Length: 140
Image (cartoon, one colour):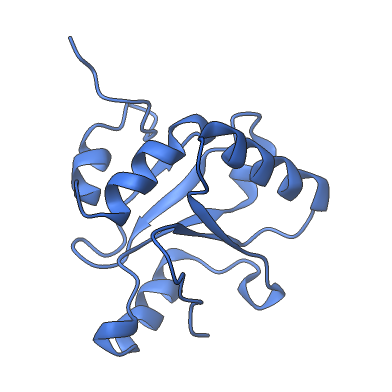
């Protein structure tokens, strides 16, 4: 189940829940509205239905180094049901399997910084709140 490769600096948003096409449309609309420029490469293929982090980590570990993706964002059942559409961010490289939730409004900032390697996955994961969601950096 090789993962598609974005051919630009966008982040891969992989749909894993196929129960509601309208919810998927709402997730994409929320992500697109959150930033001025495109930050996502959307993948909606039934072969990824229900796929979890471990399967993705195994797939990436088996891929050629040049074809590996270092992080991915999953649009899972929780993403589809929550009005804030929090994606599940999954580290596939440095700390494989480490996750945090990412509400749509924060997606452009996180995606851009990860895509250009300005920041590491751990910096965002470490800043997640008690619920496991990244909601910006606490300036206080």
